Length: 64
Image (cartoon, rainbow, N blue to C red; front, side, top):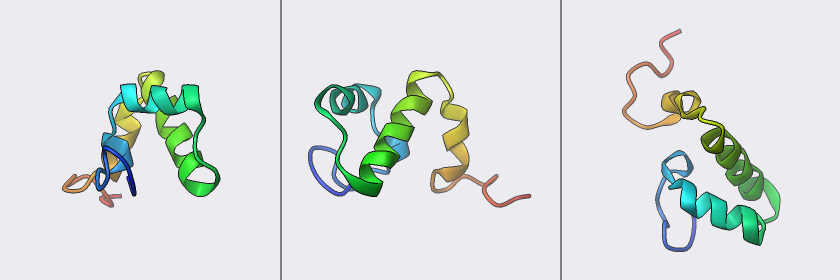
């Protein structure tokens, strides 16, 4: 996250409550807003396992 309370946190690691706040207030314009909205949809629908390969230190990343 490039700004705010969670500056420096990977988007996939943001808490759902923060993403819900953005959803109520409006996601930022551009690519960041699109990524935040996508993370929100993934997490709010219980699909967090889809984010695991994107997190640093995950050994399964790129193993295909």
